[in-house]
Length: 383
Ligand code: PEP
Ligand code: MN
Image: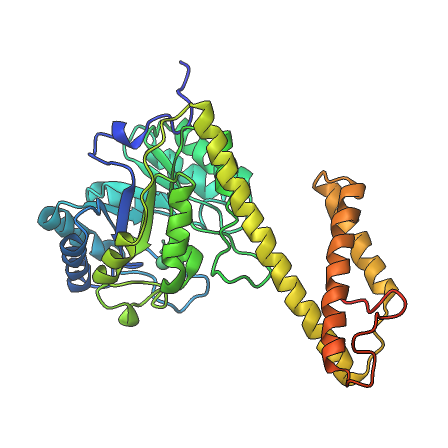
């Protein structure tokens, strides 16, 4: 029998009354019955549009010693949430035992965490446990930027017969410092959409931002990119949370945040025009990221200029420039970028770095010095 494409069922066909955008809110972890119920009631009071209540029952902690969730004891609390508020309930499963316990307790929606998605053995075990079970599953992106592992996890679940599948974009761990807890790297979810065009895609701005300050901006970007929903960590008392305390918001802050978002109209699938628009949105997003990176690079170039000026260090370092260019050419080749293009871009960046550093030096030089005169030679080299 030919299987339908992965993620072919839109939310509207999930038979759960889910509209776009699907709003999911709830604490990082279920900590106590009181905390879970208080938070859930607070959410429905503050934002009646929220459809699903999330709470981690089994928490994967990067290092041992942290709060690892209340475990099976928390499952009846979710049942009470559903009975008292009508919210759908949702939790993370990482093992076949979690799957069995969550299903037994009547949890409505499951999600696969970012530390589980990249492990094919774990994913296969979960898929086997879900064989023949008609429960919706959301798959978070793997913690590192690897699109194939994300797709692979979805494929294993689809092969087990899960038809109500969606993906959650929660950002990627990146070796460089970024302003985010997990870098959004928007091109990855977009490439996932390009590979699986019908798949519903939800954004988790909480784990991307790592802080309430940037939640609105990230959530809006996701909506602008035509994401189908948002998952936002919400706690009755974020400061007291036993996991991810620094990024959760109260139900009333959630209401304010959501009220500030512009919800774009749902875009019908398969219309060339809309597909083009989605690609254009992506280009705009990438251009913005390029501009941010260039700005950061120039700031650092200026700081190097100040340092050299202060310490009277020679500024012309052609071998450093050659090393940079050579490295970029190798990287460019791996990414399918021509050496001509890389050279042009890097030369432009280099020229601007020089201009910035020259400006720093000119400002620092007293009036009798070279102020106002053109720098001689090729100018300082700053990288
Ligand atoms: C979570 O949702 O609380 C969580 C642990 O997420 P992630 O797997 O994305 O880190
Ligand atoms: Mn969390």
